[in-house]
Amino acid sequence: MDDERVRAAINAFYKGAGVNKKFNDQVNENVAAVFGVMISETKKCSKALSWVPEPPNAKASISWVVRNFANSVLNQLKDESSLTCAKRVIQIWDRKIQMAGMGL
Image (cartoon, rainbow, N blue to C red):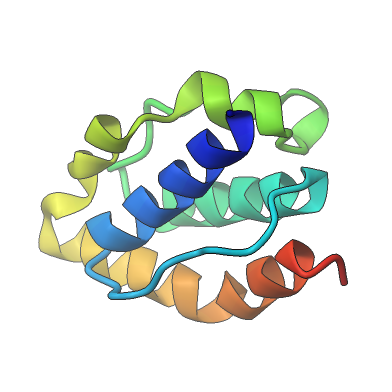
């Protein structure tokens, strides 16, 4: 159940950034950690995710993602500067999250 919620959060982030892509790989703690970095990087260039608390010990976990994300809250990525910022973050980190999902 948590795996699906994490997958949904990642996919909502992609959709909110206007990226037509789906994360369908396995969910594990490395995937959650990479997603946490993606959120932190987006927060550096956009205020759209300022409401997201920093993960404990600076590393996101599956439970952190599940607690802090829902599809509807990622709608805050709607403004143009947020879209550009989030798209750039996805370009940089997408391969890493895909590799994490493959257990690499």
